[in-house]
Length: 103
Image 1: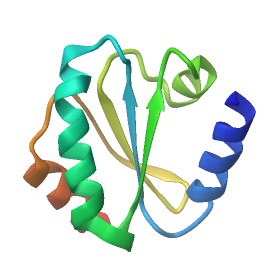
Image 2: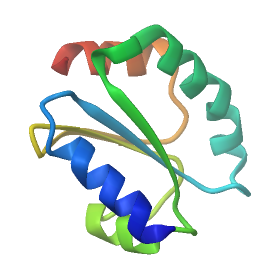
Image 3: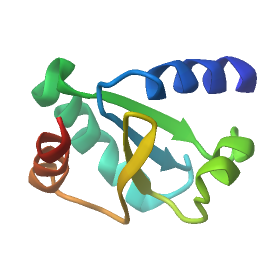
Image 4: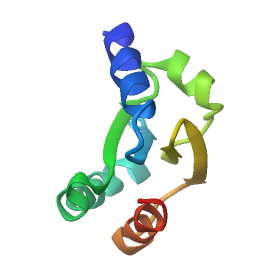
């Protein structure tokens, strides 16, 4: 499972389409509040970006790869380079504006 997630993520990161990665934990109340926001973001953004949600405790190797140590953390990658990162709860508008800035 972890290898499949890492393989899928690496193939997305190699593409020129921006990838927004959300690292979350099932037990995290802030992450739970972000779930509907991320679902709405996915519907609004469409194909302008790929959105990947990674349960950090299930994939500690990916958290280590990205240097993530808190939930929720969002990382935007384009052309294999990290373009933006922030942690905590965010509004739909903040996330949408960030993706559009790099799309």
